[in-house]
Image (tube, rainbow, N blue to C red; front, side, top):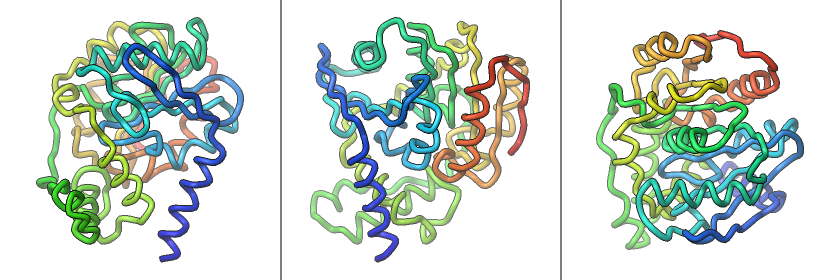
Length: 289
């Protein structure tokens, strides 16, 4: 119970401290939250997520940046008017230009499906540095760790124990490197709320690939990382391929982490990003961490 209360308290505290901007676009209202001051840094969540995918990262990164975290169209408290990736990108680009300025150079981080979105946005307007964590769209081998459990019927019936059980299972199978019984209350709360409020269907878009082609178009530095147990990729084979294709861009494989790498290894990711984003020159520091 204490862990659950702490989880709720952490989320409530972040919500209270956020500077909220609700931006009207032709595709609906997109909600952004901002923390800190400094060089603009935009964080994009994953495909069954929300801005709280970054719960363990916002405060650390906000010590050196103005951190902007949106709910993308069709997620959380952001509208979904239209369908498909082109509509989502149009709304994201329009709202991004409002909150940071259409000519402002910024750093961009994307997780999972948000990594593919970030690569598309970076191809359409200048980005100082791009960071991809567990990014979708790579088009290479995935490593499913079991079948996901359907949870919508339990949610519809208000069956809280069955809903918790399904979400714990799905987190262990797809998002984290730990067994279901070790999933903490914060991860469970965040994942459940995000799934319940997700309306955009990202899976087919993510599986179509296109990430490597988008990266080949870029000249700005790009940092990439996956957890060693990420089931949405095979980092042992993907990382060497990326290092060969993009030899000047660092690629990290983080031990003891699954897909949601910035949650399970928050301290490591925060330190790596803070160092890399302030580094004036690109280094080849590919490694296993």
